[in-house]
Image (cartoon, rainbow, N blue to C red; front, side):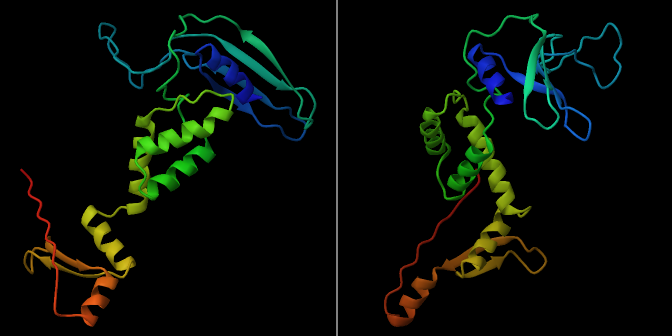
Length: 224
């Protein structure tokens, strides 16, 4: 039911959010209040002088548009939706909802697929194209932009690193994949890694079979 009314609202470039809801329980019917994303008034966290202007990025503009849904039968799954207030106090945007923070959110299945593709090394553009191709068969418009996928990539990377730094994550991956590696520190007191030698296990095996020719590849990075 919620998705049905959200899809209708998105056809008019309006975003509905759940302002208040009550879960059905023993002797209690479920209730949900869908409102415009600009519903209500902004309430500052601290009191400011009357002559000081408030600068905020809040979307609340005092809009009163709301739909009230109530469950008709206890645990029966039958709901009724009525218009609690049917007018907006602002003009609806003419453009589509592409890049909207709420409408562009990924669903659970989409986010799972995006995380798998991101972990495998797919760039955000390829992930976006895949999700858009899969969403063509869905009535709901795909309005997610590549910026959302870039944020998801950064989030996935932070979760995979588990609080480790880039150098610690590199050493962790080398150890997990059983590479032969030797980090060289700056000094005994300064444990900063200055150089890192690494070799793939297959390369080490080939070296033991034919130790007459060795190819080394050195990579230098300078911060300017």
